Length: 219
Image (cartoon, rainbow, N blue to C red; front, side, top):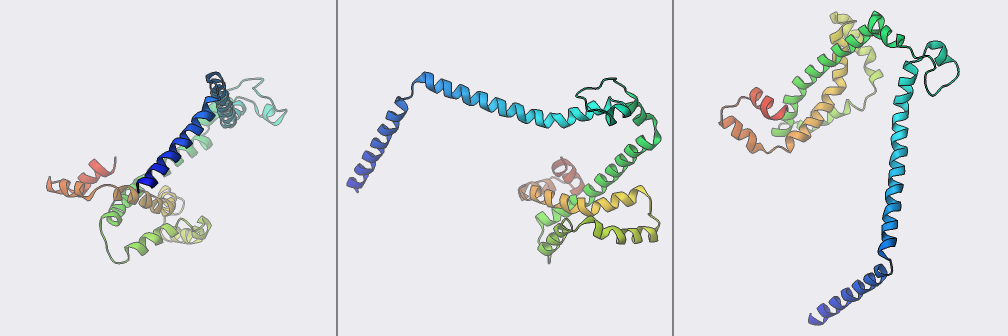
């Protein structure tokens, strides 16, 4: 054993001397030049990446300040005749701003329904064990794999029969089919990382489930 330890130490010493010899051949000035070149190279690559990321946003702003004739005409890097008529039309034309209002209503209802359904469901999958829990959780995830066009005709027939056709809640419920499984999957992973002792301590202190979820899980 002592012979093996001595040979191992000798090998490490020789290896260290070899590396010291290699690095000693490089002067401090050369090392500084290499580090400076590497920094400039990384800055140039980062600058090109930022330009490529900002270019589409700049092009949208450029086109928004141009007239229709100028947009359909020759390509210019900046607007020749700056106009704000496009922005005025968005906020004054009902066919434009009502679309934004409807979108905000869809998103608000969809978010409220998804949180109210996904939070207790994810808590149940994370904290309790029941018959078919793994199969049910896998079935929820399979809804994300189905193309939305498959549910188009069933949703149309269902909404038309119950009187929800062409309503805001119908669109929100249709989006919940894909958002709720995704929210359950994400929240289940988060709640599984929270120790169960926190739940038991909260219940001992008199917290109900709605109060516990609002104070500890929802944030």
